[in-house]
Image (cartoon, rainbow, N blue to C red; front, side, top):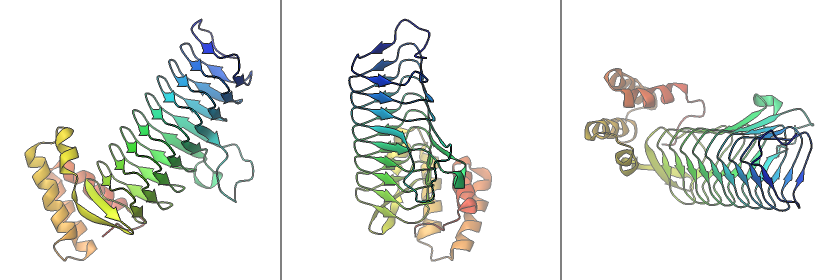
Length: 264
């Protein structure tokens, strides 16, 4: 079932399973392959040679560029053909040769991508990853399985994130960063292994954080990384600082929930 609207444009050379559901305004380029149990929302553009396998749900007004692979089986030796899912929200751009895999039953069976994200060429989103909103993954940035990337994070080109790590809100990683632990919100980092290098103050200004908020975040960063305090004590102090500041509560909650410890 390709949909009910008259505005669907499918190139005659595309291959689409009859069980796929395409909403009005969807366009599909030549040699694209769309499998069963794929749902594509209004206004989404599927480029030439894109391959989409289901179960996969894609929202509206996305653009998926040529040669991307979306919804393929997870690259996990434990995967044995179970029914797992990929969900993609609205207004995302998925560039050339990007790969996004479905989840595994060992972790909720779901890989999820939110809204307004940019995944540049050759990026990889492994099984069971969860990406928030307004994130950027620059060329060839890669996420191992079970990684969570929070809103507004930016991963520089060729950054790689180890399985089960979490990247906090408004983080910024330099090109080629190798990340093996959680990255608290607002932090800039780089290197192999990645180390912290201050806060993403320019990004925060662009997102309308006030001068006072940025000063508070800098103070929390100094407490965490420059005070010489043990991690548990630094966490306690940031929790206290966050009592009156929403931007610091975000950091305090992140530290309290961290399971892999943090880059430090």
